[in-house]
Structures are given as structure tokens and as C-alpha cells.
Image (tube, rainbow, N blue to C red):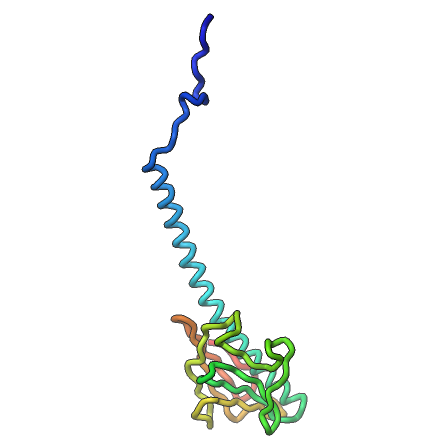
Length: 172
């Protein structure tokens, strides 16, 4: 009776990985994961600062629309001390209600609002307004006499929002 020779797949001839091979594989996976994390972090930084600037532009558009539809002055206040942006209307500068914003008032809080937290209002240059809180006020025709710019910063990135005398604000 003849014994069959072991096949290459039999447990006797199974080959195990050496410790060096396993360590090299783990090192390569770790390096690739590190590169991915850096890229994700850069994307998150870029997204937060862009999202914050877009929210400021929307607030400026909303205040302009409120002024044109109500016939009362309306505006946006940039408070560098509290790091908040507030939409207001009327001679008493009453905060505009907005049920879509946490708290029910149109206030963008860069300290606690999840999608923009960590963003800072680092500069504001508004014509005729030299101290914080800076206010941009729109008249019933949608124009403003105190145009200018506001700069937001997150990590090492900055975005500047230009506020024209007439027309929509733009991000640079």
C-alpha cells in the first residue's frame, strides 16, 4: 500500500507569516491611515470656514430682504467679543425670530453651533462703525450706507465677506 504524498495545501506544508512580514504590513496600513486622517482634517477645516462664511452671507441677505419687505430698517450685528452674528430689525434693533435656529432667534453662535464651532470673527471693517458690535443696516430699498467687510478665521484659514452698498455680499 502506497501512502499519498502530502499536497501543498495540507497542514504539514502550510506556511505562516513571519513577525517581520506582519510588522511591515501593519506599518504600511498605519502610514496610509495617517495620510487619510491629515486629508480629512484639512477638508473639515475648509468646510467649517466656508460654512461659517455662507451662513453670514445668508444672514446679510435675510436682513436685506426683511428691510425691503417690511419697510423698516433691518441689519446684521457682528459681535467680536461674544463671537456671534445677530439679525435684527426696526429702530429698536429687535432680534429677528427664526424657528430654524437653535433658541428661536436669528443668532449664529460660532462658539456653540456644531457646524461652525471654532470659527472666529477676527476682523470687521464697517463704514461709520469702529467698535464691536459692528452693525450693517439695510434700508427699505435694500441698500446700506455702512458697507465694508468681515473676516472669519478657523484654524489657519480665513474667509472675508465683502458687504457692498447695493447687492449681495460675497465671499473671498
